[in-house]
Image (tube, rainbow, N blue to C red; front, side, top):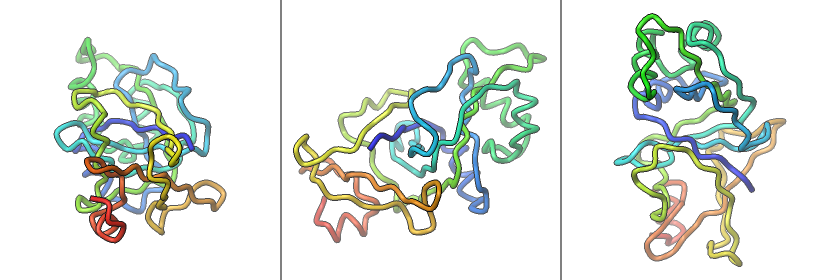
Length: 195
């Protein structure tokens, strides 16, 4: 199965973790000029924090992508952008965007709409694989691994309240070895003996 891992910051994650009632979020990109073609609607999209946290902290179902000026993005999604105000969102965009927009500019923002988002509490964070570069700030597409290509072959499902589009749920192959683990939580790692 194909999934996409989008890299985000702790502020976006914390803000949305506190709002479990949201039915969708905007995983925005500071530059709106790039198209997004990594996933088809209905495929899993995961949220990973920047290093040093470097962990999968949630996800959802990819719906669509587009780009809008910041003002329209804020008007359309408001707090679903992971910020309390448009000024706060603008400050985050300026922090990550190179070159920085002029203060009075209404910069284009990439919008990846993620349905049925879920966010994991810190004890349930999933460590990123050891072979992923720590310095990468870019997202990546990934596929599940079976026993035949080096994975352990076992699977786990996302938390019970989360279900994929049209009532289906998706699961991911857990990747285990002596030094790597992609189990859902500390309790799942303990139950499976995957440490």
